[in-house]
Image (cartoon, rainbow, N blue to C red; front, side, top):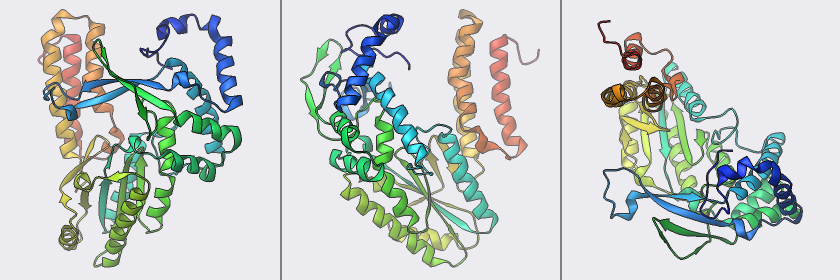
Length: 391
């Protein structure tokens, strides 16, 4: 577990880890007592929220330009870690989690989610079918979860009961937060909805809350894949197959109704649609989607990757190379002033991390497109070794 000191921690987290051998018995007593009694300690339920400007060029006087960063006591994360290990074992043993949910699961990632979706879309295109890809957008999904509904999911869907279920109810209720900005702290406020931000258990509890959604989508014969609160729907449509599109629109209606009844807000304005493939019927599909108020785009951004209607990822490669060369130029300016080790850290953080992200999607692309990425690698190598292009 990475050390992250909270303002409410009695001692710095790094120091706590250094003396953990002395304190381990006391920590175990707290964890075991909490699990035995089914009570999460009230003193660990308060979060410190710090506002962070999303981008440096944004107006700092506009509140919507800030991202709230929530920090919880380190001891609460230790307790959550003990619980999530057991909860994951139970979920895995009974195959409870949606198999098409890749968020925060072992051996799953944004890359595995995108590879599954893109492979399915390419297979549809190989059959001469069109595919309609819809990226659903939820507004503040983690913050609007209803605790009673989540408790019902834990009971009816996960099979928890007794002191275990009581522990989760205690964990969710009675939470508070205050905002800390510089030397100023706000008043403490109650948290009545949502899973705790910055917590260990929060993302998994959200996945459990969303379990019925997969059944709703599958019931309309629509394919889907999710990563946390990012859900992608996609449907294969053969030539002149209008019924499939009707099924998709009915599915969207049912999703919207389910989300409304579960206190989740589907942001229709930010929901994106992509039509992939060309079988002579795509114009009719586009017109029908437009008539329904669903605007089709030529490319969409899915989990940080730009996906275009031809699945050639040229736009994605353009963005990667443009951003990478921008950072390389800046690194080159300071290269004479820093050590080789520090230069490697900068290149890995700002360049190679972008080249590596979801690069399995680029398999099989034309060599000329891949060579553009090799040019970035070569430029990075020259900066690290301080060699000129001619050398």
